[in-house]
Length: 178
Image (cartoon, rainbow, N blue to C red; front, side):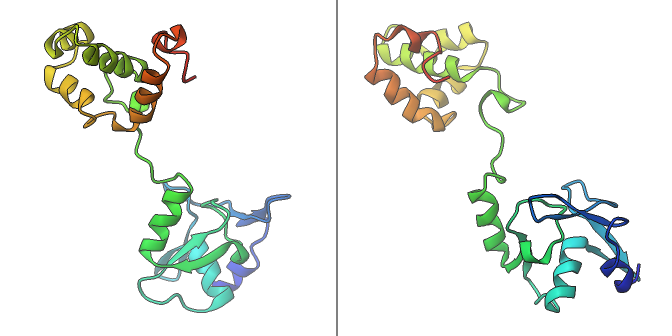
């Protein structure tokens, strides 16, 4: 593909998205949703090429980030330069760098409600970790990691709230946090 064809590819290579300002690449895309284009022998992301056409060469080691958070967008007004650190911070701040956790994680054997129940029951002193492990079909070490906040640590605030609202029937039934 020539640079001229890229510049004049509206409708064939990319299209505007009404009301968003985005111009999205509609040809080949990576598994992450970024447009891919071959320019001569060089394969480049379409948003990087768009940025280069509008602003000149991208300095070595720099990333082209999206203000709009649309990977297929090639609108140069939506693109800006940043370091890899900037890119990672941007992704984290926008919630795109979060690994799955809790029951949405494919490896999870128990739910958030069960974790809170395990902690509540263990801290009541009425049951041993090995008893909880057998009841929930997990190993004793997992129960230990749960009660010591090495696993499901992000539920600490919910446990504190559950303790503060002890006696509220909705907590024990798992409805309190829905």
